[in-house]
Length: 122
Length: 112
Image 1 (cartoon, each protein chain N blue to C red):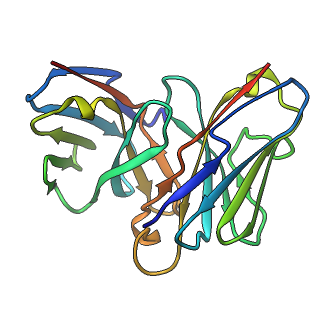
Image 2 (spheres, rainbow over the protein chains, first blue to last red; image 1 turned 120 degrees about the vertical axis):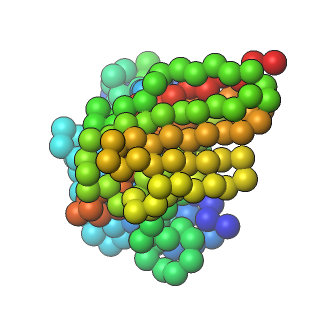
């Protein structure tokens, strides 16, 4: 149980185009999803927290108009990188948690992570 | 991640024990976690410890927490080649909601 799936796993796009990455919780309802960015050989940087049905909360320094996050249902959150440029190339990872009882357990902060999506902008 | 520090790299021989260390600065941590990341993949939760505990053991994994020194460690007994990965410690802070602050990551290489 507690599977989080991301799609696509790898995308290459031209500079100036927009790319959408999906994050799905397959066997639980994710009331909260988190989006991270990871540069090579570096740690995860939290970009935003997404609660179902409300606007995402962005971390300082993250452009909300550049990285559009939508969490329209309890099983799906999307991250759209708008007008992508080479400096947006990175590994994007989502994670999900839920308020419901049982794992993943919000009270412990246990998060389940997607497999990640590698974006390469040419 | 600059508030949570880890060594960058650790190399051990197969069958030995590995000890990965993590230091943090925020005293309001409620839970601390260890995650494993294999190349090109997401993060897998290995174990976690509540901040009022000082030790937790789970099969080959032993977590030690020294809250006074703000030091967390993960010991992997009988390290195998499949344990080669990057290991991240992470902390959940009081008042921070469910946000986790990740360490810089330690790459563990297990050699034959």
